[in-house]
Image (cartoon, rainbow, N blue to C red; front, side, top):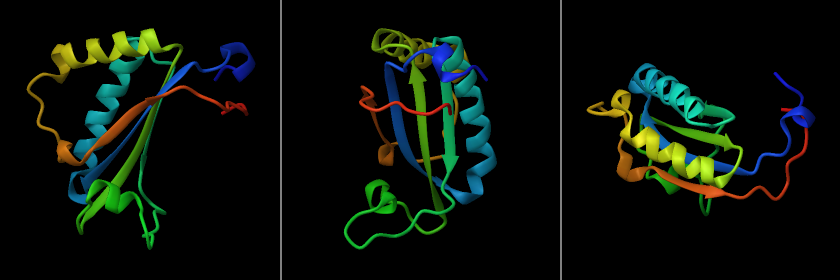
Length: 127
């Protein structure tokens, strides 16, 4: 993997959080892997998706409440790094239109997914 100095600073990132039934982990992983390949083809620099393993239940708020996760569901936390917002906007448009993504059954309830685009304000380290 190239050193961060070679890549330059990341100029835009997307984050999303999804509750996924634990029984659908393999199906979700396959979908995420296919989507990651498309994100990269359409200009993303890096795609990371994490299956909730150490996600505590809070007393005021937490990932479970934010997604209305039910018993038997794990929370997925994901982010996509882009070189700039224009590439991100175009990339998402291409992803939504990609034949590979049409007609797929999603292994999660998309109504409980949340996402957003972010301008980095701190970008340190090599990872």
